[in-house]
Length: 205
Image 1 (spheres, helix red, strand yellow):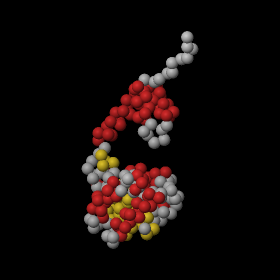
Image 2: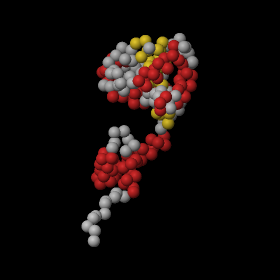
Image 3: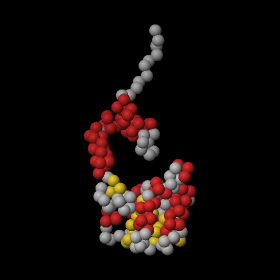
């Protein structure tokens, strides 16, 4: 008679939840397992709140039709605010970058969010970043400065160069953040003081 034991396998529902949580950045197999066991064993009420909040966000949050930021309305709070300086447009790669700049408190203009960067190797071209919408904003005639705040990575620099050409072709000033932000750095992870200095010390692109 065999003395081997059957291997334990978690229920399909638990495995499915673990795989779903692994979609989150920085969450590996062990981390996902800890989260699942914690929620099921110690905080089922919290699990329900997370599920409800996530479903609510998926149902209600879309994109601002002007800047592409996440919004529950047609226009986000920044684009609809009469207190923002509409002569300045800041180009960022992600909503996280916008949040970092807003928290640094050094900018009072409006934004355009690319939701990525140019990456030919990954098949990401200008049409995938909403360049037609951006060009429509550039053609409105009210902009005096476009701040290129894409990340200081190879892809971010290539994206900034591409957009800078579009901006200068329309005789609009194009500036680039640089000072204080390390090469290869992503704005989301730069501290607020460094980000503020990089923004106020921006240069001609």
